[in-house]
Amino acid sequence: MTGPEAAGPADGWKSRIGVILAVAGSAVGLGNFLRFPGQAAQNGGGAFLLPYFISLLILGIPLAWAEWTIGRYAGQRGFTSAPGIFSVLCRDLRARYLGVLGLLIPLVIYMYYVVIEAWCLAYAWHYLVGTELLVGKEGDVGEFFDGLVGVKTDGSLFGDGGRTLLVIVGLTFVLNFVLIYRGVGKGIELFCKTAIPLMVVLAVIVLIRVLTLPADTPGTDGRSVTDGLGFMWNPDTSALTDPKTWLAAAGQIFFSLSVGFGVVINYSSYLSKRDDVARSGLTACSMNEFFEVCLGGLITLPAAFIFLGAAAGGMGTFGLGFNALPEVFLTMPGGQFFGFAWFFMLFTAAMTSSISMLQPVIAFLEEGFDLPRPASAAILGLIGLGGSAFVLYFSAGLTALDTLDFWVGTFAIFLLAMAQSVIYGWVFGVERGHREMHLGSHIRVPFFVQLILKYVVPLYMGVIFVAFCVQNAPGYVTALSDKVSAQLSIGLIVAVIAFLALMTHLAGNRWQSSGRWQAALDAPIDTPED
Amino acid sequence: MTPAGWTIMALSIGTVLTTLGFCLYRVLTLPPAE
Image (cartoon, rainbow over all chains, first blue to last red; front, top):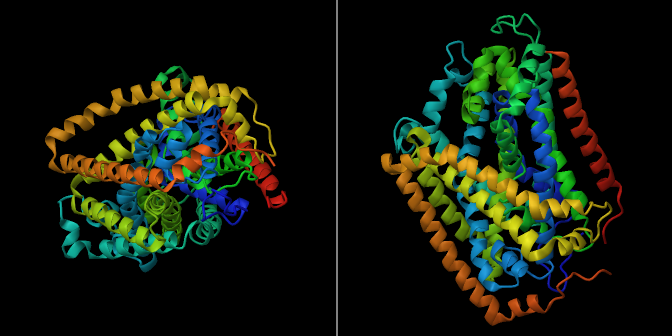
């Protein structure tokens, strides 16, 4: 499939479907099952789907195609990491510093995402063994969550109460690194080929349970399945005249597809010019939409509404996932089994995302310093472990996690995605992008998509970004003066940026002195066809 | 659930399933790249 070419990467995908499943696995996560239904309920129900699909067509899919294209282009010139990829695209080694964002984002997100992943595995484990607070008659899911994540006091997880979670975090960490150590083809691809079908099976099991709940199920106060579906899907057309609905839809598409994450450009850099990036990109997007619309849209909110009523619509991502749904499983017949299936599915979804976050940095250490994979994995493991320990220690109010998520998991992603869209449209060039996208392609993407990428996407993203900052940034800036853990989180981000910038600087010097950079410059600007 | 709700749900899910099914079919039935 993707054999090593003259200047191409040594590692690679073993099959066409493998890279699609890996990219879809990277995109599918908690947001598909928990964030999407909440956004829909708060923004017009079924009416939300109109701006949602429009955003998918003019923002999500074109951006995904652009990432697949530029990743493969740089991979063909011997670079698979974000600093190398941006240098190749701009034909200027100074552009490598922009690639720091493409390393920072997956690395910092991994630090807290692996903790959330461990929560999911902890829930699955506690459902399996029948922990009283989750499945007993006197169950209290709120108390369980607070105790599990240590929401009340900083450092509480490092006392006796947090031992179970620490063990599970350790297990999750090891699992991630075993897979990443095995490489792209034998680790990530092999895992995703098993994990994605498993997620579908587990989600369908829970879906069937939700859709077949009898009308007289205890705890539902007479609310039926169709009432639950109606809460999610009935359109409130007045929401379409509210700009917030359109912004929410665009934001959901943007985060759901994981564009601007630094992962797709890395994954696609292992592809050859004979691979069909246009169709693979479209298939990966469709798969993500399947999990989001077909499974997330039918399970989460309808189930929560049936048992909890309209209050379920106002809950945030964590509230819906770790309080509302456990409350549902506490009441639902067979809730212990379905709770296990649901949280194990979420854990699997989180795993396919977290391994994708490690690969961009591993690739950078390998190509920047010629480190063997074990050494790269060990360095990355130590950095990741330090960051995760920070998140676990500063657990009060989940402030550290929330701060990292806002400034890196949201703000920095916007920056990188906007930079990518501008570089693609105005530096790399849409004419070249169009030609490169169609190398090995079995479908024709109309040229107006390139025009959308050049003119509409940067503008659309700029508007979303400004509106997003106006809505959310003041609260997070205020938090910086109030909370020490928020200040320390910013300190952590700055330290990681400084470290990555230094490493990127050194890597660039090595590429120059070894002739690797010159070889990339000497390669034809357009990839030659066979 | 109103008729409009049913319609939007069926259209959304139908569109996603059709697109995914078509893409997967074409990906899985293409000859190997090399």
